[in-house]
Amino acid sequence: MRFPISAMILSRQMIHPRFSKMILALKQGGIVATHQYVGNADDLVVCLRRERPSIVFSAAHYTQDQVNIHAILENLDWPYIGCNSGTIELALSKAALKDHWRRHGILTPDYYVIKKTSKGKVSGLDDLARAEDFPYIVKPSKEGNSRGLREDSIVFDKTELDRLIARLLDEYDELLVEQYLGRYSDLREFTAAMIGNGSNALVMPAEIIIQIPRRWRIITTSDKDEHHTMAVPIMDKELSLKVEEKARQALLAAEVQDYARCDMLMAEGKLYAIEINGQPMIPDKWFAACARSENMGDAQYVNAIFLAGMVRHARQKLAKNDIPIEMQMLHPE
Image 1: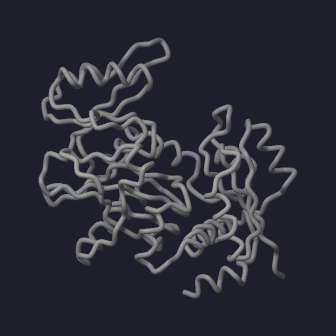
Image 2 (image 1 turned 30 degrees about the vertical axis):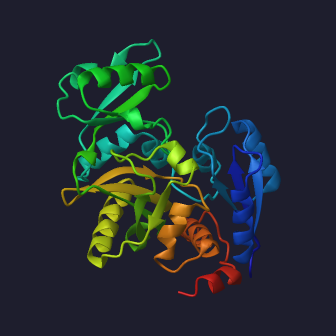
């Protein structure tokens, strides 16, 4: 017997065109979706028990009172789309993720971590004092979407480095000082979107192009907001397969599930894992560009993400929903 599928989309925004597009896309897949603003943790639990959605998609990582939303859903045994709460936390810390990758043999640029405690003390400065392999790029460790990155985030000597760290520590508690690979003339940037789980997951690579001239390559928040970047197919098939395999290794090492996106840089012929977005925005132009490599349109890849999560939960016996016939028609393969 077919069971009706209802989805709840959670966000920290009252309204956004992205969620309207998601709702329309899911309707094509036979899923009735609604959007819900995320308040505090208690309010979310009340909302879930009142609305009883079959499955939840959260565009936000935390409630207003800074509780991991996926942790709440796990405690309630509520089916959801995306990475488990531990992987979300791992991906949100660039430093922790790079430590994790190194333990699993995943190549990533050399780095230092600077942390400020609640008492105002700063750790990591002694190690950083030995840094000599300039230039470096300095990033907030726990921010996504290039937040905190500017053109002056690349530093070329200790004076610039100390000055930038002092400024950023006024705003952020953890910084990543990473070897800047833009020193190499063959630098290229790639992203790879993943849909699915385990070794059978679909990994779809694309190359990231910056459309404005710049001496030193860096993608800032304003570049993304003002659409100065674009993702394009990797025309070299051998390179595309190499990027796909490296991304798969980096994603599986982080134990992502259902969907995610991995950013990589290539320098001197080597592929370096840079970061993972364990809860990427969808619909999104970079994710869409990756999905086009598998001839999937927006409605198809959004539904494919939900399909991956629904199948995973069905296998874990947390959800027993039949796959809607509309979704099967969207994904005949």
